[in-house]
Length: 354
Image 1 (cartoon, one colour):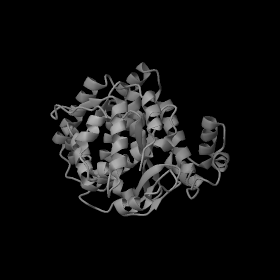
Image 2 (spheres, one colour):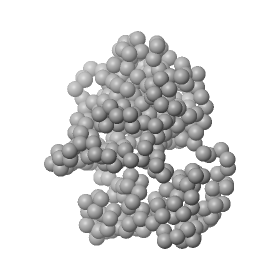
Image 3 (spheres, rainbow, N blue to C red):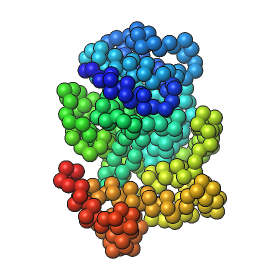
Image 4 (cartoon, rainbow, N blue to C red):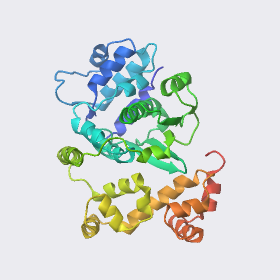
């Protein structure tokens, strides 16, 4: 299987960073061994030197994707993206592992996704969508001037890595119901089923891992507040050191997505979720030039649009989910946000979205 190196080059030209992190060099080695080749010659050919394994490796994006392309091409017997995702660990990010080990639920653990995006892959986002009895972990990659279909192998790594991280967190439980893939069925589609062990559907609206929604709030570990707080503080210090001052509005947006019940409540509930006083939250958002009510309305609109894609979800259910008193109030708000009624928006989506 060969990656389109021209597409990768276009993608890399779109990345603003002069270098990107390789958060799991040991995982690359393990995946290469699984696929029957040595990673060192591949890295040398791509111009990547690995002199010090004790510090995180950062390399020019083009070099990294040349290496990745070569790995996919020379792999034998296994699909390299799946092998890399299965072997993935947070090398040099011990605080991430500590945070995961101290989380009491998967919902809590998913906060890691926003931190990983800031530190490791700013062009990748993992969204949590909840539909009735299902929860979807949706992978989205946004790179300017690049057709997202060209990133299919990169998304495969992400899907496989999320699967094994959650499988470890749930102690080997069969949490996964199905896999949704946005691209058409590839030549290696059988390897999808073999790797994930669940039904895989191609030609979907997005790439996603699907689980029973109840898994999000099932107990994982005995909650240890001290360890959890310490891991969070270490992550926040790293973010401040490597990324700079974080915008509170981004934390609010992620909290509203990860915990949809906050869409039904007011500012006080979100402030409590972020361990802030309501006045502090309001003041800091104002300093960033935004109002909480506008951030929440935007989150409600995005959530409504996501739910409207699922025709089996009634307007009444969406209204309740978003905290509206009735369908009429939801319709009024949605039309104010988008210029369309919910019914018109759903009709506009067409029959292609399930």
